[in-house]
Image (cartoon, rainbow, N blue to C red; front, side):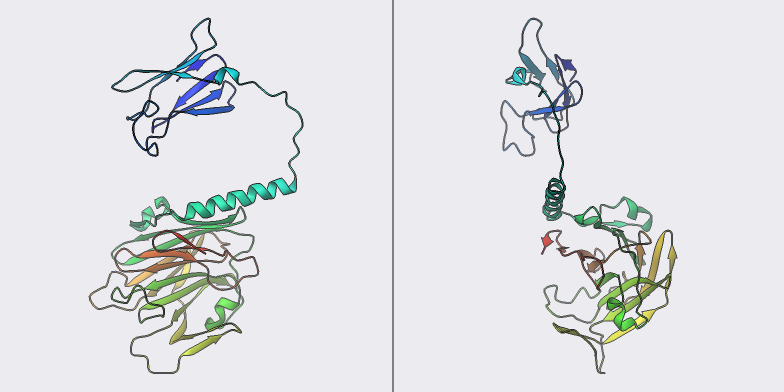
Length: 327
């Protein structure tokens, strides 16, 4: 948009114009965003906006915006001539101020999470380009999960920022969730199961991936197994107890790039073979506690949540299968 007097202007795509001082201080936004304007009007550009000119006629203190598409508009910018620079001085940024800023950022990220859309891309090679589902607690506790699939596998990549590495001391696969940090995946492999069920069904699988003794480790939990007639394994705490028909350790796990890769067979579902096996990739060597729940068949639903226990403060909210946040 050029320059006029002490100001410069920038046109952006959805019909608005931003004004700055010549040395880069933000001043104001002109016109309304066409996506949220609520209709047409003299302050709305009904076009893709790439042009415009800010001008200050010679011998005046008045500023104008020249713009338009099929029309030509001359709009006066009122009040810009009254903008004055402050004298300046000292600014003290206290620990309390920093906390307020961090809390505001965390609240913004929490609200933003409500509108997240879960994408599943086709092909493992594209997983790094997939728009992830993220959870942000603060700058030292956050994670992003991405998903991809092909005709044989479901791929899940989780990048985690945390002070605590992915370490676990439990040798018993039944207690791996108590031995340290874990990354968990929950799969609902039976598309015929009630999507609103409150209790597990055959085909529901939970996999916990961690690192023990410097090597990747994983355990598979099946709360319900088709045809199971034995005594379930009961995991109990003072607050709750949960039965599992089967808990086993898998040795189908190895290194993949900078992280860990686990491959496990999924229960075959009648007429549905698209999720015969899955591969899980940990994005870094030191992920914190996080989980990705995947439900469905060819296009799995996903949910970010928490699994296991950790000595570091846990992340406490989730993103639902429709992309909205849950507390």
